Figure 1: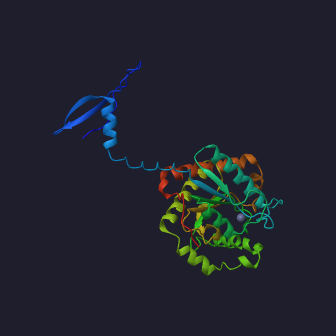
Figure 2: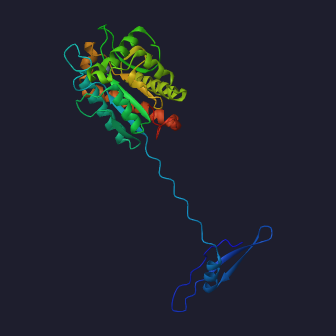
Figure 3: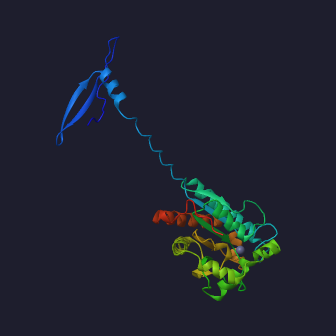
Amino acid sequence: MLSGERVHAGRGGMSMRVLIGRRLLLGSGVTGAFLLPSWFEAALARSRPPAPPKPALPRPRSLPLVMLDPGHGGKDPGAIGVSGTYEKHISLAAAEELRRLLEASGRYRVDMTRTRDQFVSLGDRVDRAQARGAGLFVSMHADAVNHRDVRGASVYTLSPTASDAQTAALAERENSADRFAGPAFRNTSPEVAQILASLVRQETRRGSARLARDLVGEFDIDVPMLENPSRHAGFVVLKAADIPSVLVEMGFMSNPRDEAALGRSEHRTKIALAMKRAVDAYFAASYQLTRLAPAAWG
Ligand code: ZN
C-alpha cells in the first residue's frame, strides 16, 4: 500500500536523481520509508491504473438575491399625498437607497422590479422575483388610508384573511393596482388569491413572519410606527409560494407628517438602514430559508 509522498527532490547537475519517498504500510499500522530511484517510480506509475477524474470543485455559492419591489409606477401613481407627493416616487427613491446599502455590504445581490417610473403589473413583479431566484421579496410602499391621523411604518405578510379592517382595505387598494394593466390582468379574483394563499408553504410563511418581526424590531429603534405594526392580508404581490415576502408601508401619504418625512432623503435613509439591518438579521439567523434557485411556480 503505497501512499506516494514526494519527500525530496535533488538539486544540481547532470546526474541529478530525483528520489521519491514511499511509505509502506507494514502489517497493522507499522510504516516504513524507502527511497526509490526515479526509473522505479516511473515504472510504478505505468503499472498503476489511471487515476479517476477529479470531481468537479463545487461552484462557489452565489450571494443571496434580494428583490426590492418599489410600489406602483408609470400610469399608477399609488397614493397621492395631502400636499401632492406621489407614492410611486417615494417608493422608488427608498428602494434605490436600500439597494445601495445592501450592495455596499457585499453580502447580497439586489434586483428591483422597476428602476424607473414605469408601470409593472403585480404578477410581473412576482414573476421577476421567481425567474431571478430571489431569496427575499420586499415590496415598498407609502399608501393612504381614510384616516388622516393614521401614521407610521407597518409591515405586512400574506394571509387569506386580513388581520383587521384597515389592512383589508389596504390590501384591496394595493391589489387594485392591476386595474391599470388592462383586461389581461384582471383575472386575480379574491377566490384565486385565497387559493394561492393556501398554497404558501409553511416554511415560506415562517420566513416571511420572521422577516416581518425583524423589520418591526428594527423600525422600533428610530422610525415612527403604526400601532400593531405587524399585520397581514391577501396582498397579491406577496403570493410567491417559495419566496419569503413582506410588504412594508414606510408611512402613510394620507398623514401630513409622514408625507413630509418621506419626502426627505435623511428619513428615507433611516428607513432603509433599518430595513437593511432586518435583512442582515434574517439571513444571519437562518441561511437555509433563502432560495438560491426556487422551483418554477405557476
Ligand atoms: Zn402602495
